[in-house]
Length: 268
Picture (cartoon, rainbow, N blue to C red):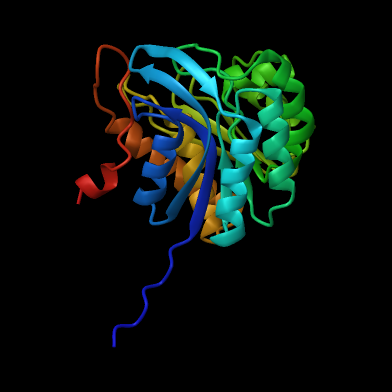
């Protein structure tokens, strides 16, 4: 008689769809598969999107988001949750309420602007992100544009990243990763909980095809947490994974192509 197979860690993404497959739900599920977890999804919005930008976006009703979430969590269960594009204050409030009732670590990627500069979060939703969503986050992963959106701070150097992290922590997440990829020089991120700091550095790869980096990093962190890793360990492993994915990013269409989520399997 065949022994039952072990169930992989279960990770849920609550995010929007990227029809081009480089970011959003699609990037999250590819990352979860690559890192040996079972990915599940709650769709919050649909975008018409390709390598050139976002041509349209339509959010789902709050009741559809709530039903998807309860359907997955109440039956299958989760060991980590990752949030991405939430689009509106109504959806931010809805998801924050659901997360507050879920006993699992939460990685919040406060998606506000796409790689191409397209708005993915309504301006009136920023207060809900600060007051409802970030307080339930185990880890928040803003890039520098999102830091400016949420705190008003403009970051131009590493001391500025430290100030930005303090401002983000004031909203309530337990840890924050300020992503410094938009700064010149090596790709540096700052992970801190306000008492300890981890500066995570990686070489900058000469590759413009970086669509989906933020989604990928946050999902990879969630995978580590679902495996029982502590936050610094999960973030370091996620940084290594996304660095490899950036190095292997490839051209699609006429604009910015995606990172390669399956890079590790193709290097064996």
